[in-house]
Length: 100
Image 1: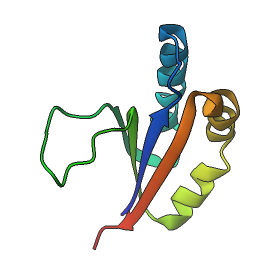
Image 2: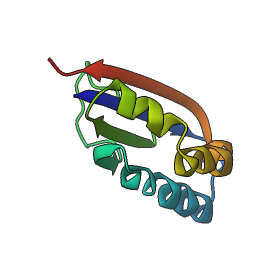
Image 3: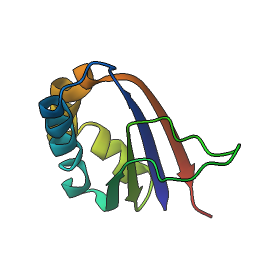
């Protein structure tokens, strides 16, 4: 299994309409054919020194393997999301991992 975890930090001046458009775009991504499971979330109310919870949205996608992930990256829905929604974030961090 290939896990693609993406954390987005929003622009500081986003309107509620911007946030809703961004969230709508994020919610299209788990529906891409090569995604086995997908989740969109916000930071949990947990406060410990080891918890990073300053991000705006998290996207967690599970794929069968790296090839499925690579096909997701060039899928038209994913490309449209980036083109439409990139203006909403100021920072993105991606953690890809293989479940052993």
